[in-house]
Image (tube, rainbow, N blue to C red):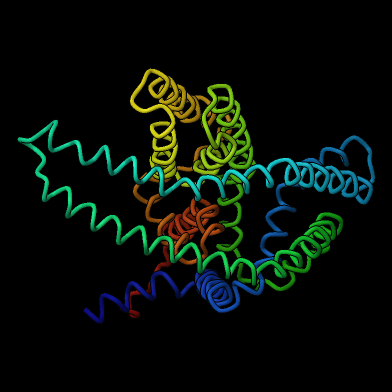
Length: 357
């Protein structure tokens, strides 16, 4: 067994390029695990700079100076962000507060409906089963309420950090865009000479996810906007809040759409009951999800990330558990990175001399 492991180790890591790739991965992972919270503003700025580099390059190609192009793009980005926050945040906050206040009433009506099940289906549902289920759900709701209260106090403490983000991140984004070549050359000088596999992994990552982040942002905006308009036109309560949730649900493949269906269905049922309006809304919601999966996603992600659905779900669970929202957002790129590393090692066999066996 030891000899088998030794042969595998020599085959994979006797190449200096493979060893350098492994060392770089271990160092990067250690830095993210130990100081991920501290350097998160830098990572966020790098992501935004990556998103904004495309319009900057287009302006540079038509003859605009890079500094001026960066200024124009940053001004447009900040303006859109401010107007979006001014327009959406107050509405979402108000609707969130109203929904939280009405949650006990929604739960009370749900209990009344659940208690009628033994009368309607006596052969399938017993009264004692309903009472046991209600006791368990009430305990869970109390725990969720306590968690929300504690989270609200912790968010107040993080408000100062948010203000720092709002000032420092745009500045870092501007300088990353303006001095892009300088930073790329600096990173290149830091890398070791044995970087053939590192370059190979980088090229494969760029080929597979060059449009992923931009496409995902566009998908969030389109799905969220269409959902908001649909819910408003159908006079659904908390339309903007639910529309934004539907938009962000596309971050979690396969799982997000199923999870966000629950609040949409609950609010619609509380508002209309099991009526034609309820079914019209659910049909419209189903059409939005179908168009997203069958039309929008193929158009935005022409270079499909060739990952099995199980790998994507595992990546969402693992990276989301490690880094929360940003882990979920980058789950597919990080899974693609893992696949690219495995492919580079697998396609890079090292011939071992016979005497080394």
